[in-house]
Image: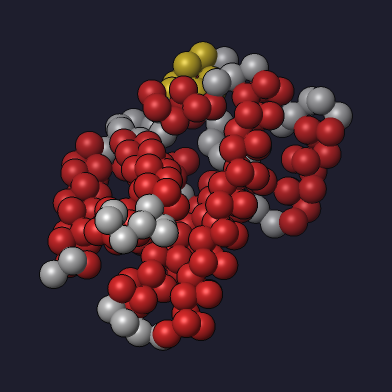
Length: 201
């Protein structure tokens, strides 16, 4: 195997901006002073998650849901390989990580949408409780995801965090994506900016 291009720009930019957006939203959740930061951070999460749903259908090979969303048997088989200390190598997302991504996207959309409703005085106390519960669940899944990334990096002998920064992973030459799709990344950034503008106007 050799280093090949696996993660395109929309996946990488979306990953890190969504992580930053959720982190800022969590840190500013109880602050009136930084309420606008909280709201814009939530809008960022929503914009990235909705874009990612589309990109999961029309994006590059390893960005597509069809490449990493598998049934329960595949997930069990992959987890069993981890327990044996001989993990299956996947060029893209592994079966367990794939489902973590689906859950993170769903929770990201629900959490940010409920936050937008609260910001616009819809729903009352019940919606506030739901929003906080969704955010706490999202944080839990993030922690599980991080644990999976760390364990996967150690077991595979490959820095998965670095891969999500550079886009390069170990694989066969014929498995590489042809382009990092910079124009699609520009569309994502414009959509994030538009979502942030719309939510405060």
